Image 1 (cartoon, rainbow, N blue to C red):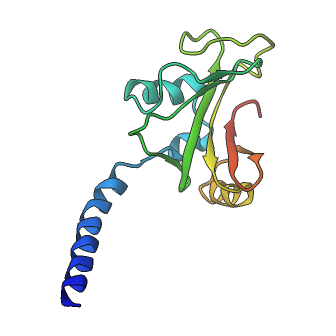
Image 2 (image 1 turned 135 degrees about the horizontal axis):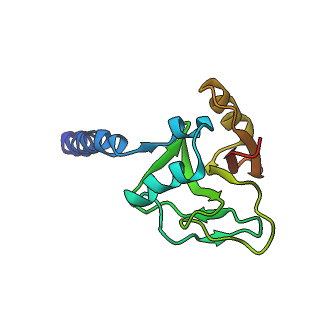
Length: 148
């Protein structure tokens, strides 16, 4: 009985020692989602520090480029895990143009894991006027800056 208690305490102590380091490495994108940047200003630093994959995982017809977060990046936005980062800026070599008309001259944002209402509440609490769009009900929500 005492050995089981000791083993449990040992495991809990080991986990609690590692937990702060995991949380410290989270990269919160909240400040950049105040919708005051260009898509280049938002995406370029993420590419430079390798927080997102260099090659877009998808390019929409409206030229929005979707980038997958790097496995080790641990990106968050307003307390939600980032599923994808997206953006487009006209005449910028970072972004590939889609087959249709670009959505706007510059737009960017993230797709997070979380329900739209909860995401919207946190975004507004932070003072951002980003557009909130439900992607998959209760699972994925887009936080979109640009084209207001």
